[in-house]
Length: 303
Ligand SMILES: [Zn+2]
Image (cartoon, rainbow, N blue to C red):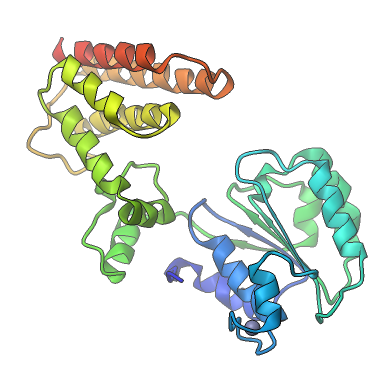
């Protein structure tokens, strides 16, 4: 497992696992993995998370009767999951000293689901544990906060992330990745080759390639349309940022006047609105959309 030095506080807090805990901090910071690693030690016959004993094998296969993991990545966590949690907590544990429920992406839990589980947080058996892992501050009901211990993980600075990458032996900086990438996204991108894709994207966008060539590049890009739009939004923000010295500027950087910067920021909000539409209307035409946005960007940059 990768080490996440910014989670030291969490490690300390987990040494004596609280009955009710909320771990809050930005996505992709390793919160869930850290909590999970700690949790499996409760069940492990060696108490180490040995990965080989019978209890560990049950955990690994997702079949441990005393561990419930609720982990929705995009969908809301609704009352069905709330009910699952209530049922799980009301059963007596089968073989373990305690039962543990982990609710990952707890910020996706809707109000009815949160209300439905209030009672079990009130009456939790002191042998058991419910741990909420949330990517957004203040996303749960205050009544839930008031019953739980809480750990907040602060957002990292660019320097901290760069130092971390170096400590892992990577010769990288966060400027080699989209700005919205989390530390975990960065590691994944290094391992699955997306880093190179992104570098090609940046080179293509910064080059003096014709509109048609850029369009061709996008057509060849093997990624969902939504992600291409994310890349474009990020690139426009990068163009603006380079002019405000926020990002390290490179030699190809154009200095834009305030009119151009204003056009770029309008264009960025246009793209962001479009992304919102794309999330609800999946059938928007990619070919037309990318063509339109690229020509628009060309127009802004050149005029
Ligand atoms: Zn084990």
